[in-house]
Image 1 (cartoon, rainbow, N blue to C red):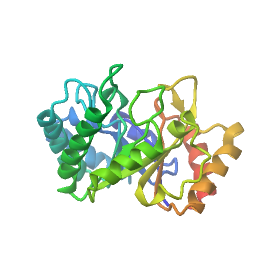
Image 2: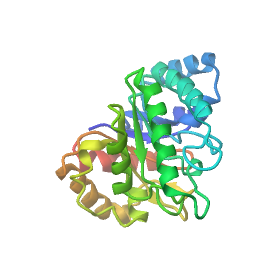
Image 3: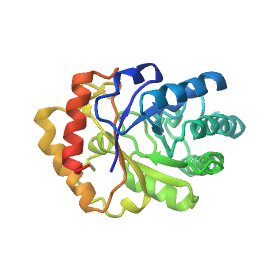
Length: 260
């Protein structure tokens, strides 16, 4: 198993020497770049012995996955550009959480929301599949949005769409919000392309490094994950800039628990 850290492009210099196998960059940040800076970013990563295997923070709120104002042409154009950039960086999978893009008004027709989401996922997965990159849907906690909050809902969506490049992200922070972090995960492992883990520093927008007083809890959950059959990538997903000491500590813990 390989361990990564979510970080902005401006902070990758802080990661060499921390022990991570790869970095996970924000999709919405990369989208704002031009091709020249993307090539320069690839060189910066290569020079530091880092690889970008994954993307998180897929898109800004105005790229509507489902709900009023959905524009599939805009969503597909966004995916097409980001997929090309992801390929330039040798990305394997792109996580789609982006809760601000799937908040539904009260009373919004759920059948319509599901149809819109299926179309969005098909178009998006098609664009990334052209580069052999997986798209991974993430169930997010109700602290973020009100649509696809539970793993079962995310799995059902993936099974319904039936796209060969569509998978799941299992996010322990969000699973904890939904009371799912300690459940048996066997039924979800065949769909899982990536895993996120983090601790709470005071709110949903303040996910932080793993806390020593929660190591036992994280160790139990990670062992459950492996016993369920998962052997893929795991990223530490934090909202603030990387702190070298905390990066080293969290990475050491994860590698010890995951035996990698």
